[in-house]
Image (cartoon, rainbow, N blue to C red; front, side, top):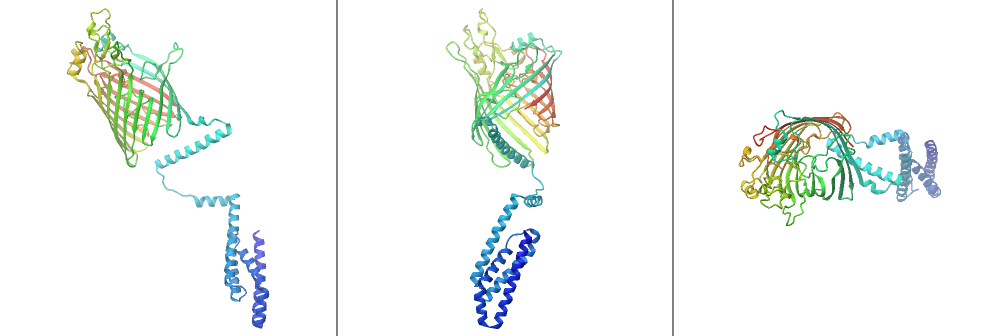
Length: 592
């Protein structure tokens, strides 16, 4: 093609040169002949000039571009000469050049489109090289954001195409499934000087403690399966089933034994979450703990019923805040003239602030107030109808001070010991976390938590319990308030190690690792013993001791972990020896 263009250009140039020589010869002979030549050859010269100019301005490949540029210059000079000789007017020449240039641009565009439609390897490589933007360093946070954006876009396209190919209904895309299975070996070791079970229950006003002296080995399993649904752009929901005792609000573990024909399965999450704005969320139903917390006040497996609102403003790149308020029913009581107890509620509020550095190190601090309403026991006095039996906790672990609410009818044949909580509970809670990411992906995290029960009041207690005596009063001393608790934890490991809401964070990658050491001290009436950690001293308050542990990733979403709890009673009641319990947990967990 290019050779034909060249040949055509050469023929045109010969014709133009012949025409030019003839014109000059006629000029030398006579002006009449020149005028005749102008009139005779003007159309021919114009056509030849147009053909030459159009041909020279036609696009070509890179190797012939230089020679064509020279030919183009020659042709333009020829047109200018025709103007000088009067064969072509200046206006006509400009119009001719403009028209030829436009035709050349059109031809170039067509060639470009054709080249893009059927690109060769060299052209593609060159185009890619010209368009590539080379970046020396991309920050990790930018990489993650780009990865997530690409992932969301690709998955959205795949879901759409899958539905189009397979004819699946659109609502399937709104559902997401996740879960985990955890296998555990647990060894409970009791101190040699522990009190026997009868003496311990008698001194502590309890009947739910079944073992204080005999070591125990158990195989346990936890299985969870959740369905998350995106209802629309602002409303989400979740339903999750889990193994475990239906009467225990804390532990989802199922003890393995062949005689159990089936594992118990229950619903531990069922909620709707509304994102009113990017920073404002309202959740209702049964949902995960909405507060910034450790296992000092709340067991990590505990879920909250009710409604909560969380506000998370972002002040700038470094500073952000958080605030949560909520109302949570703990135990519903149907009050009447016969049953004078009231429903038990928790009202919680928390506010805090977080600072994040450029290297992802952070400092987080939260201050909370937890108001437990109607959880304290009320004496039945001499009323044999026992109208305040509903004040007895439906679920207890151990540690809180209690009294017999039926002591006033002890002589009556209908008398049965029933123990209610001695103190009211109103907790001030301060939680902080420092996450050092200077050695990223290895983080060093220090977590601290302090709480105090400001609801303990001697005068209020005396007016409420009447003539009832306090369990273990001879050992405790009524004025010796035990209302403070604190927890300190140091964790080291790969990104994600820091998680104050869990005793042991999860590991998602092969060879990822974490380790931690913690010290805890919970005085008897510092927190409600029903809701604190169920593993430390096998649950409850009036306990102090150490927790150490670690985990190691053996594959994607699968890890091994080990934890050791060593706890002792702070102040045993009724002059008994302190209860001592050590717990070893070896686990394998797989998330999916």
